[in-house]
Length: 498
Image 1 (cartoon, rainbow, N blue to C red):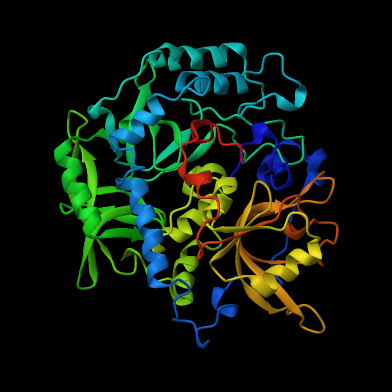
Image 2 (cartoon, rainbow, N blue to C red; image 1 turned 30 degrees about the horizontal axis):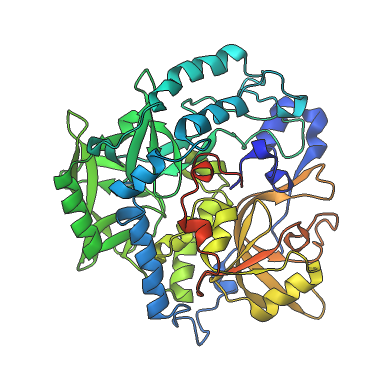
């Protein structure tokens, strides 16, 4: 996922069919649907159960353990929002990258005053946001609260529901002009990500109306609704972390209903969410956070089936990857996890979570989670040839600038006369565009899509192999630039550029 106000993701972005069919028929040539008829969306048509390695792990036990240890570290270890030293580093960042300064920069980014036409932000009513609109948000943010910062143990918290993380504390959308190809719906530039229930946080501040909290999560810093966060104390953390370090449970069937031991519905859990728990026969018992009357966190219990969740880490076999993929494939594209769907980086991150593989939230950071081979200077033909020869299925991700793709393997092209080799990928993508990017051919979902030099459906569309960047990362190998994701970059946490 990238942020449109840095104008990096234009090559992948798009507009909505609904938006145009109701609002701008004259501009309908800016958007069309990309047909998927020629590319089976059944994973087992590509990753066949009768293959000899279908149940053979693609990660060694030692490497998977190292990945899982990293995952635990970001949730409950030294890089966790519950870790005092980690939070103190964030609180005491040197100028100019302080919390207050960066929040002021974000307010400026979304201020329409004195901006060129292509940087004006619009609401859902097609009207530009006014000075009054941004000033009201700025007043509610109250920047002075970060003039003096100190650590407070009571600011530790946990998400008790699925929340939308925002760049500013508002539900209002911020679209650029829908008449520009690659802008408008679904790209609400205030939308950062989803915060799944059960995720640890630290509260950095609140709005003056107390409706929003600025929180540190294991991957980013954003604004969430305050009623979805409960405060945690030492007793809660001790019990929660002890259970998590014994067994952590990942959701493997998206939109799983979580009902507590008293029959009360709590929330829907999505692939990417994790909870402490343990397996009991064909059931998995999990700990679920809730809030008491004082908004203090309490622990409840719930049960899910073994088809809905797994003890982490799930063994990284093609069989298990297909199982998780089956619950994600075909779901609509959701910029910044809007509507509890995924964008490109959210999809890959969520997909890998049951296997205990932690990734940063944004695509430009995710590529540094593995051993990096930069093929940016290579020709599109050489890039595809490299993947065909050196790609490792499920363990190879490719960053092309504002977008991330997973390599699934090389297969005969069913649509070519000689059935020549074809790179197959798994990705969540809004669409393809020509060069220059004057329109979008919308896919708008998680999809199995080949990386071809040209698409017979429309040979003017630019392949992922022809994008400006092409960085290949091997997640089953040691990262060669670990500092990119392990050193705290406060600006990137608050203002992701890609």
